[in-house]
Length: 435
Length: 77
Image (cartoon, rainbow over all chains, first blue to last red; front, side, top):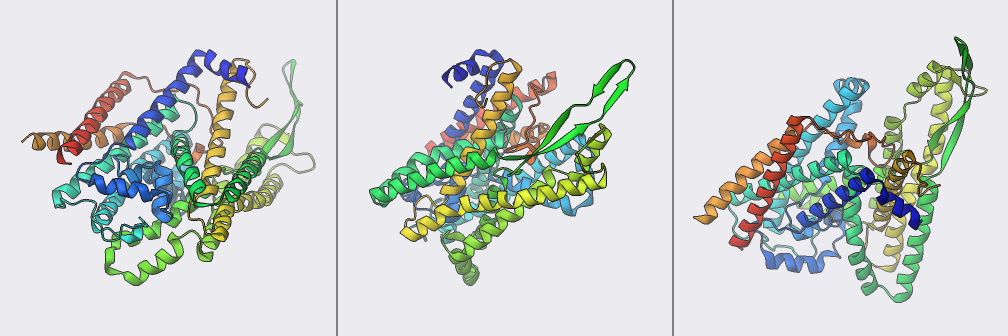
């Protein structure tokens, strides 16, 4: 293991990539602590002391933004608008024919979609920062800042100040988006997931400390053990795959013989990784955000949302969350792996799955297998995400409400990045982590 | 007076920053390769002269923006 770590730093371009990624993460973390002008600092300090108890929307957003929310930092919105924009684009892709067309165009179309995602990100950032600016000014309780009802975080309120803050947050979001792209482009791993990973990991010590403070020692140990068991489970399921054998026909071109070998298509049990969890939790954050933007005019709606969608321990929240996770697992798998396309590729390369005719039967077979293995995969995701909520609800602990989500993201991204580093090492014939 | 100048710089740099970042062609690939299935594109870093200059310009603007924000935050606090 250690020698592999050394190898990682021996290859110059891999080393540069890793160092670059670390540099970007460092910049991102600094930005999550730089305060925005015109916000009341002393109030922020109070807010931070309560931060760990913030479940609900703010807790979740704060988790994804690595504490930028409770710092009221320049990177206040973090990577969230980008994620939301991506979800919207993916969902719209099914509805709007033009987007569908673009997606089928491959690289060029993908580029167009990405560009529109970026525009949408900026739009969403403006919307969200406007909502948040007003919420911070009104001391709106719908956000779930505990103990901050009616407190004004932006005392010198005027139109200019509001515009200024909105502009700063929007620019911050754009900057975060660019940082993520830089990582994807020049660093290691996928930028968006690396940044979320960094944010989530940065919250772990504080959350652990809060857990230690609130629960008894025995409970703490049990929670740690559950956490360990979950990590093992996540690694196990993430690397689980069904291998569908593919046999290639021999063919003779000139005097040489090609093909004749057999390979397999790896179908992961959890094809979509942790995306369903991230999608589901961001969708759950929507209503509360809207409610907070509505202000105090719609009290009944707001109360209902507060009771059922902000607190993570009600049965409504848990059921809805589970259903969303399962839905997005299927949805995303359908987007990521197209049986028809796959069947086509196999047929064109002169391959076949033993016992199944090429063409439509292969397609149907692949779709059937995929559907069957996605169900346990999605159920597993849901169970991991829900377990901490249930355990904490049983013990009346309000800390760490997104423990399952955090763990899933952390382990998922770590595995993915490890695989990428590994494949880079493989190119240089070093032994990797995973062998 | 100084506040006004800093506010001016801050607003200007923020607007420029958003504009410049939107000028970049997104290489993130969106969600398609997020958390899995990410194909390694090798070092496909954009290295046309235009892009490198755009990168430099963006970095400079970002630095100005961040410093302006912090200075402003310290001044109005």
